[in-house]
Length: 276
Image (cartoon, rainbow, N blue to C red; front, side, top):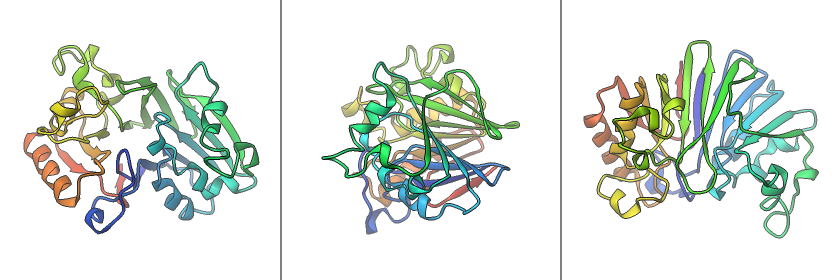
C-alpha cells in the first residue's frame, strides 16, 4: 500500500508561504495497491485537484470515499479532472442519509454554486452508501462506521492483506463515555483498532481545545490517547487548523511525539507518501 497525502488542512484551504511544510489544501488522501489500474481516494477536498493532474494514465477505476459532506471535504470534486474522462469508472461512497447522495452532492455541483452538474460528467459514475460491513474494493477491503462529528460522518478502515489504514479526519473521541478507558464505547475505536497507520484529526492544541468542545474535532493529546487506546503502530496528525502556520503544527507534532508511546507519530505533510 502506498498512502499519499494530497490535502492535509482542515475547514478551509490556506495555501501560502506560512503553510509550505505541511500544506494548505483540504483533506484528500490516495491509497494505491498492487493493481495499477485501481485507486482508492479518501475525501475530495481541494487537494484532489492536484491529484487529478498527477493521476497515472493506467488508472481505470477510482473508488472515492467521502467521510462526510462538509464543504472542505467535497470542494475539490468539481475540479477533479478524471471525472471528465470517458470510460473511467468512478464510484463515490458517502454516509447514508434519508436524502439520496445524488441530491446532496447536487446542492454543490449545480448552478448557481457550480456551472457543471453531475449528469454532465463524462466518466462512468456510480453513487453508493458507505459500507458499514466489510466490502471488497479491488485489492482492498473497506469498512465504514459512524463517528462523533456534527452531521452524519464516518471513518474508514482500508485493509490490503495484513496491512491496515484507518482514516478519521473529523472526529472528537473525547466526547465518548469515560474516554479513553472504555474502548468498546469509544467512537471510532473499531475503525482504528490495531491499524498500521492511523490518520486522525488533530486540529487543536491542548490549550485551544476547551474553547471548542463539541465542534467535532480533536486536541492533539486526545488524538494521542485515542491512538494508544487503539494500539496503532503509526499516527499521522491530520486536519490541521487553518489558523495554524507551520511553526504551530511543528509544536503540536513535538507535543504528540513527547506523549505518544507507540513507534511513530508525525504531522501529515502534503505531498508525502507512506509505504506499507
